[in-house]
Length: 241
Image (spheres, rainbow, N blue to C red):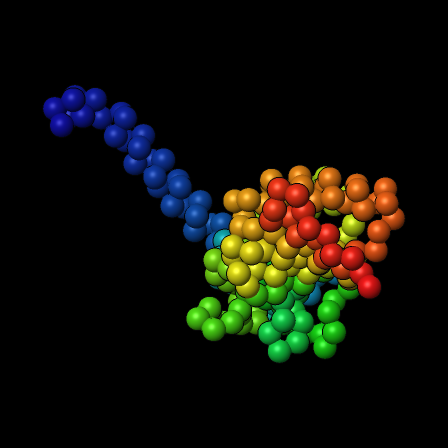
């Protein structure tokens, strides 16, 4: 205080700067320059910005609240961000969810990696998406449409899906479905017909190595196969009759 009494200039400067800032804020909220005239959004955006934002002062718009209002129009979107582009434009960025698999709850529903169950359903399995089975059942939480889920059984199915997609063991074989109903005895189906029986998630890498050798042997001998059980050091191959 004594220093300020002897040096009034810094305090006066601070008062002037604060006054300028307050005046600037008041001017910005009244100036025609900052009245919104444009809302930029992707051409194929499924959300519609209310016309009421046009003509409002850009500083008076609550960006988070507007983003939440737009998200409510399309819950299946991953997120929406609204930003200011001075002096008079709002920009809306939309990120779509990407389906990575499908689950059956009534009909077949696509699901993304966050466990969001898409509302749209299909009576038959959706082509191109791995079917996740065993994620629901007695004693397990239900999957609800239009919501994200972090159920352990669903997350296990995602981890197995990712490990299979990265593995070189399958070659050109395509995984059609994965069953995690028993976490200690995982099962998946390739090419609509070959059932592969594995152990737990912790054993999966080792069991995929066994599968790779078994598939090479099957291809070399042109065997018609119904199932491959890789839980044993020497995989059991069940012929198709």
